[in-house]
Image (cartoon, rainbow, N blue to C red):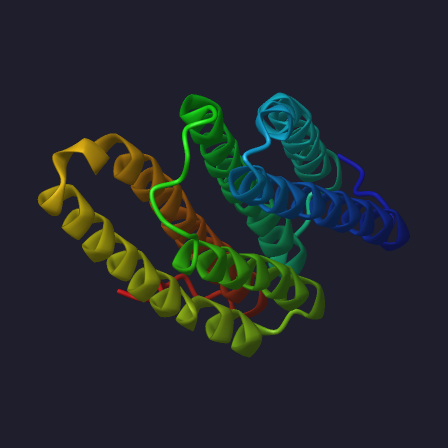
Length: 221
């Protein structure tokens, strides 16, 4: 098989990178809108987040197909192959993150117009951190910076701490008044989705480290 010229490979990798960043932007927007729907009790916005999840899935599969085509036709080696494989793995985590955002939106729809159990304090904090982690993990990908990727992964401890805090607080509500169980459970599900987003971003950081160093290691164990 004739291997494509270096310039062609570089252009294809650049296109994959741009599509990956576009996917990441859509996923970040889904998180933002899902939490805004929760805060504003905007059921229509929540339904839109759920509907838009299909477009994210479609872009993920397009990128996957393009990666496989690049591997089959251009036979990348060394760092180029690691980059392509990293992208294949990152888009899976991005799609899963979008699923968690859609899950939050679904919870908002289930809640309907029922008032929130308590003011939202730690959930917006969790949201801010996981969105910062997501953006910085892609910064690390673009810059090929394994140290930045490790810094991003370390922030998952902050997310876990806030999740545990939310869990304990909501459990107290449920124990003191069983009538609050349903509303407390809704907020607990929201927090759990955000906690899982932090885990998925940690996976992205691991793939950036693999791409740049060839090292395969689980972070935050």
